[in-house]
Every structure is written in structure tokens, then in C-alpha cells.
Amino acid sequence: MVYNPRRRGWEMPGGHTEPGETAEAAAEREFLEEAGYEVEIAAVTDIGYCDVCAGWLGDRVAEAEMTSDLFSELPEDLSFETDEYEWVIEWAQGVLRSLRPSGVRCNGPQAPE
Image (cartoon, rainbow, N blue to C red):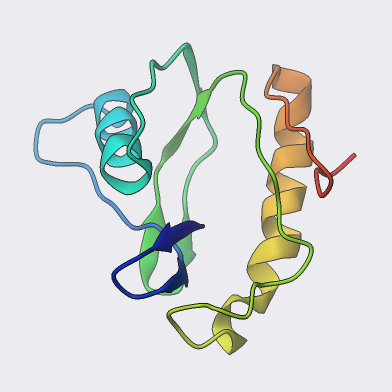
């Protein structure tokens, strides 16, 4: 999730692949647009895709060392209704647990074991 200061709340980032753009280039571009940081893709793992609340989670996920924090519950200052997103926390923790053997690492007070 990213904090949107214009809407004064947390929201799910969105994005898509531009025509002719590789998944890696799209991930780098979207990360810069959504988070304001440049990243370099170290490796890619194809995990398929899933439909997430009328949006698409990209068909490939970049594999990299990263530090992240997961919410154990949704923050109160969201810029959208929370009912349809409550399941995302448990789902995201499961995805991160499944990626751990591939070298993706998370840490922080809410990181899944």
C-alpha cells in the first residue's frame, strides 16, 4: 500500500504494462510512479496473475532483496472503503512466505515468518 497525500489516506497501488513494455520495465516504471523510488530488477519469477478488486497483479514479480513492513490490520486513514480489502493482508503475507525460498526477504515487526 502507498500513502496518497492528495487523498490523505493509504491506497492500493495500481498499474499496467504499456504496449511493447516488458514486465521488468513496467515494474521499474510503476514503482517509481507509485513510490517515488528507482529500483533495479535483479531477477524475475513467473508466478502467473490474479484478479484483485477489478485490477490485475502483474503476471510476473521481480525477485530482489527488500525490506518491507506489512500491516497486521488496515490503517484507519484509508482513502477507500476497507470491506473489499480486508483479505489482502493475509493474502500478501502468504505470497511473501511462498517467495522466501527464492531469496526474497522481508523484515519488520509485521513480517510473516
